[in-house]
Image (tube, rainbow, N blue to C red; front, side):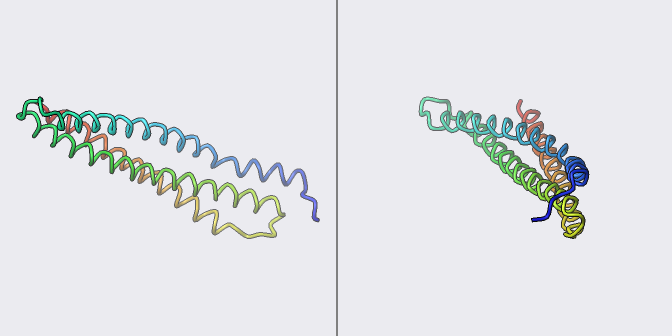
Length: 148
C-alpha cells in the first residue's frame, strides 16, 4: 500500500476545505426554507380547518380559498428552492471529494473536469435556489398587500 505524503495530505485538505464554506451557506438556506415552509403548512392547515367549519361565515371562504392558492404556490416555490439547494450541497460535496482525492494521490487521478463541473453545477443550483426564494418572497408580499 502506498503511503500518502503528509505535506501533500495537508495541502489536499486545505484545498478541499475552500468550498466547504459554501456548505455553511447551504445549511443556513435549508434552515430558512424549512422555517418558511413550516409557516406555509401551518397557515394552510388553519385555513383548511376554517373552510371545513360549517359555522364560519360564507363570505370569507372565497378569500380563504384564494389565500390557499397563494400558499400552494409558495409551497411549490419553497420546495423547488429546497431541492436546488440540496442538489447544490451534494454537488459541492462531490467537489470537495474530488479536490481531496486529486491532491492526496500525488496527481495520479485526474478529476479536474469532475471538480470543475460539480462546482459550476453547485453554484448554479445555489443561484437558482436563491432566485426561487426571491420569487416566493414576492408572492408572499403580494398576498399580504392584496388583503384589504
